[in-house]
Amino acid sequence: MAERSTEHNATTHWERSINERLKRWNAVVTAWEGGAFEGPPDVDEEDKEQVRQIGLSLWRSLLHAQRIMVHAYAALLSVPEFVAEAHRRQSGRFSTSTLRQAIQSTATTMCQAFWLDPDRSGNLMPRDHTPFTGIVYALHYKERLTPTSPPKPSISPLAMAFFLFHIIRAAEFLAEQQGCRNEAVFAAHYRHLAMLLRRSHYHFPDDRTQVETLCRQVDEVLVREHPETQACWQNLLVQGEALNLGVTAQSVHAFLRATLPNAANLFARCFGLDR
Image 1 (spheres, rainbow, N blue to C red):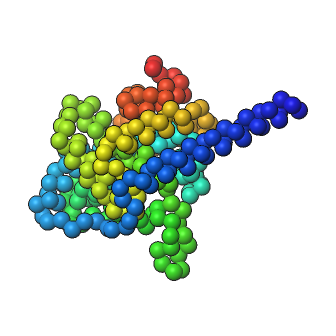
Image 2: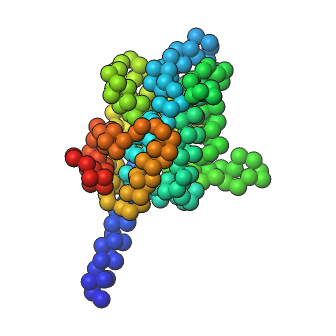
Image 3: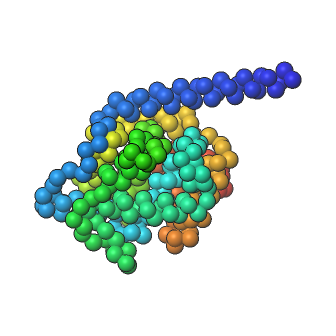
């Protein structure tokens, strides 16, 4: 009985510690730039075309956009608290075939963020407006959008910042894997997505090192063995295979190793890979 009580106290202390960390890190994120819903910016055709070229350089096609999202979701799924948060919003979002729909819809949304739309063959074509900020607002902002609609549970500021940073890093990583490393394009890509997220009622820093540092801290503290994480990772690879993306456990591991060393080690153990 005493041993059981000791284990319970240790678990309770761990949970309190994690909750305090989450509270502190969410406060850090909400101190960054942004936080108001402003909608997409007004830009002229020349600026649109410049952003389209960034999108075509890094996102390339709908299929490639979905590959990016599989790698980014692998990072998000490494944190049990982020998985639990998502499943409170939508049961089974990451542990069932619903994840496949999330990969597809988020990939399309990200292409649209660059004034691009996939055609029926998955090639990216110009579009006249970007709904990115409106979509983020409608899906994830907690207040009622109309008097009759129920409040929508929102993604926490920390989880949203963590996810967007790894979307950015996944796009860069896959470009680097194909021998394309253009720092100017990477910087413009970061600035564009950071700006759009800030106009969507969320926060994201101009200073990239701030979000990099926070993500490393999250990796050091929150990433750990957890049945939900492992099950969702396995499901992620299953859904990637169902979409014919050619994503492998080795590719995902290489991405995590470049950004989240603890997550990479855990992923390697989960799939029997060399570290």
